[in-house]
Every structure is written in C-alpha cells, then in structure tokens.
Length: 395
Ligand code: SF4
Image (cartoon, rainbow, N blue to C red; front, side, top):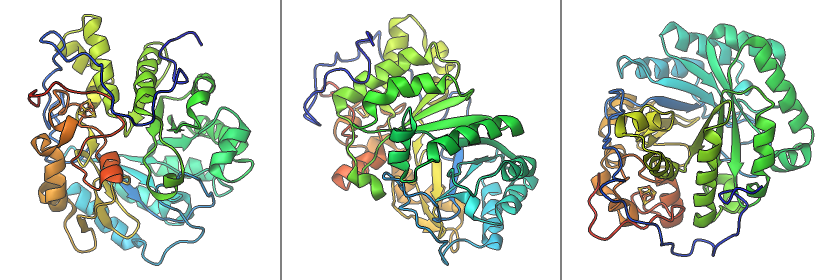
C-alpha cells in the first residue's frame, strides 16, 4: 500500500510521550459541541444506547473478551421478569427512548431472548443484536429474532482469513461460520455491522480485512481499539503513533467505502476527521452533518450506558465502575445523577492533556483506557498523541 497513512507504516516508540502536532489555530478551532448532539439529543437526559449483557455464557473463548465469558449461564443473570422491568426502566428516560443492544457473552444462549426482544419492541424500544457465532446460531433463530423486532446485527471478524480470525476466537471453523452468518443476515433482511479488533497483531492485516469488508454487503465497519481489560489484558494495544496513522487511513477509507466506518474507544478519530475536513474547507455545519459529526460527544457514560449480566450499571462494558444496580436502583436516576456519570459528562473535570484539549467536548478520549492505564477515568487517554498547547481552554 502506498498510502503514507496506512496502518502498518513505521512504528514509533511504544507509548512514548508524543508531540509535534500543530496546535489548533483560529481557522482549525473545532466546532462547539457540548453534551448535546448537533440534532438536539441531550446526553444528560438519556443515553442513545443501552448495552445489555444478557448473559456471560458463550461457546467461544476469545483472547480479547471484555466479559471474560464462560461456558455456562450464571445464576446471577437478570431473570426474564427482571429483564422486562429493565425495559420498563428504559422507557422511564422518556421519548425518544434509547436503543437497546442485546449483547453478552452470547445472547443466543438465553432461551428467552425472543421474548425479551418482543418486550422491547412492544414498548417502542429499538433493538439490535450482538451475538457470538457458534452452532447456537441458525437461520431459523435469526429469522425469529428479526420477526421479534431486532433491527440490526453486529458480528465480529478480527482477521482477513480463517487462520487469523479463528486464532483470536479460540475455536477453529468460526471464520467459515461467520461467513455463513453474514449470508443468513442478508437472507432474513438484517442490516449488518462488522466489528474488528485493533491490536498490534491485527494492525498489519487491516488493509486485507477492509478488502474483505467490501465483499460482505455491510452497513458499518466498526474498529474497536483494544482496551487492556478482561482477557484483552493479555494482548497489546497499538502505539499512539500507529493509532494516529490508522485514524488518517480510516478517514481516507471512509470517503470511498460503500459502508460507514466508525471507531470504538478511539474518539480521537474525531479530532483527525475534523482537522481533515477543515483543511478541505468544510464549515462547522457541514462537519456536524457528516457521519462522524453525528457521533460527536458520544463516549462511555455520555450517550452510552452498560447493564452487566447481574444488573450492575456502568458507563460502558470497558469501564467497569458500577454506579448502581437495576435490581435496586432506577436506571435513569443513576445515569442522570451518579457522580461517575455526571463527571463523565462534565469535561471540565477531565485531567492531563484531555483536560486542556480544545477537542474535549467532541472527543474526550477513551475514559475506559484512561482508567485501565492509570486507575483514574478522568485522566488523559494514553493512546492519543495530541499535545494541546499549554493554557488552552476546553471547547
Ligand atoms: S487529547 Fe484527549 S480530548 Fe484531545 S484529541 Fe486527544 S484524546 Fe481527544
């Protein structure tokens, strides 16, 4: 690949202090976005997305599993009735209701999944599915879940071929089953997102993985930049310099790809995209209307909330700070008023480089990575190489 922004370009010192980025000028000052999306959605009122870890049970043994999933279901899981009460709690946010992502472990391990999806649909709550690909997935099951109200589905592909993907998933044959699951999703009419893990091991394979994505008929490719939690603590994050190159490469791809491209736990992609769009002459309104612009500000605890299998409420699955439990607390009250959540939405509490960055409202860094690295979720995201000028004010 000739592109100098290609993700496998020369590697810099791992996590060495980075600098050399030009400071924002008046011309490059980012659009002003607080805890309100450009379309008026107020993150302090309600999250856009509720991730519900319906179970820890899963037939795979992925090397990077956030949930540290296990073969059997836990007796601590929310019951069907408790799940219905959780869905009632979600409606307490008021309209527009947040969207629920049924995740796990593998949500297909729950025999009451269709019932829960129907319950969400009956309440007017949109629903998506993030299953594992195992023999538990069948065409008939996907058709039933689509009929129950599932609107989109995400699958994981972490390598461009079977050897690479199956190596991560821990079960031979998973790549072939995933290709079959993609066909089934198309057959039953489920729009598909593919999630790909970004580590120093998958980085050189991303161009080939992108080529694979182009053949799969997907609506979105989401690249998850590893956080060292769960089983992922045994894998290696990419360096800040590689992250910056990767973000530039993704920006180039996003302009030609037949699907949307997004990053997870790499909100600094927004800084890269803003600067590239400003250099291309786009004004603030035009930037805010782009796919990346519509995601400005969304991050753990700010537009996102996570419900663990046992009901614990935290800002995301990658930021394991339980602020309450749906068995004993009102979800909306915890999300709106608990100090963990309110501090995550108040960028004036952020520290280090993120705390003095003019992109903080739009980006804000990965609070989960800051926590994993420093134990302080308000600290600098160590994967971002940007060094804001001293004395700069938050946007
Ligand atoms: S310094 Fe922090 S807020 Fe600024 S671009 Fe980097 S991660 Fe985002």
